[in-house]
Each structure stands twice: as C-alpha cells, then as structure tokens.
Length: 183
Image 1 (cartoon, rainbow, N blue to C red):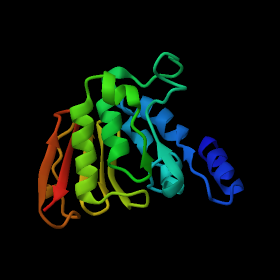
Image 2: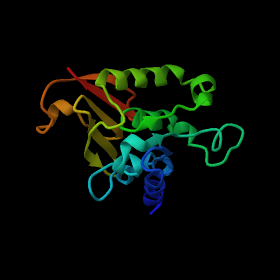
Image 3: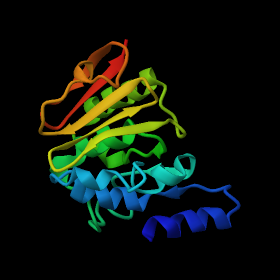
C-alpha cells in the first residue's frame, strides 16, 4: 500500500516527477538484518518504487530529514555499506547522503560502488533478475552485466547454470556483499 501511494503521487504529476523511494529505505532496514526475503515482491521484482517505476525512484538511505542532526529514522550504521551496495547496483536514481560521503569514513567504499555501477552501465531503467532472497541472503543480476550478493551464504555466479558468460569478482566485502562484473 505504501509503494502504491508513492506511485499514485508520481502518476498525479503526469509522470513528470520522481519521488524518494521511502518504501525501499524502510524495507532495507529489516532486510539487512537477515530478512533478505523482504527484497523481492510476489511478482519477483524489487520491493519499493524501484520495482514498479524505477525511472522515477530516488533510492536513498538517509537525507537531511532522516539522518544527520535530525536523527529521525536513521539507517543502521553497521549496515550502511550493504545498503549502498544495494541501491548503487540497482535501477532507480541513487542518492548518496552528503554526511555519509564526507563524514562517515566510507568515501572509498562509495567511490568503488559508483565505479561498479558505471562499469556495468546500470541506469534508472536497468533490468533486475532476482535469484535468491531468503534469510541467508540475496542475489540479483542487474543489467546483465553485474551480479550482487548480500548476506552470509556461499554463492558464485560461475557455478550457476542460468548465468551465461564469464564473471570476475570486482568487490569482495566478505559476508556483507560481493559484486561480480561480466567479462
């Protein structure tokens, strides 16, 4: 219902506006605490506005209204890099919070994730194929050029029959997340 209200608002603008994907932000709060199954809807799409209308979804973890000195609904600090790995490798228009980039000591991580997005050619309308979303973790192929794994299970794209081609690990953050790019 929450996602539908945001889409209804975008529709009311004639599709000329984008909106903060608050639904995805909220779902990520729980999903990254071993509830990765929350990242897939019944139609097999990403939850939140990014699953229905990704070109109008502004994905974010915090902004000046939620984080910083406001402290209203801050994103879990220990899950920031996982959260950014998710929004920066998925469709929509990801927004990086100024404080996170300049004041939280994760600038290098964010720069690396931005580079993965650039190399894979991910944009606001990129396709997503979700392979796993359960209590152990999440795996998705985005734009046919990138695979991301979040969570605590052993998985590798080269062992999957449905993933043609050859894959090279680009980022390895252990149990937090791994990213492969198609060679």
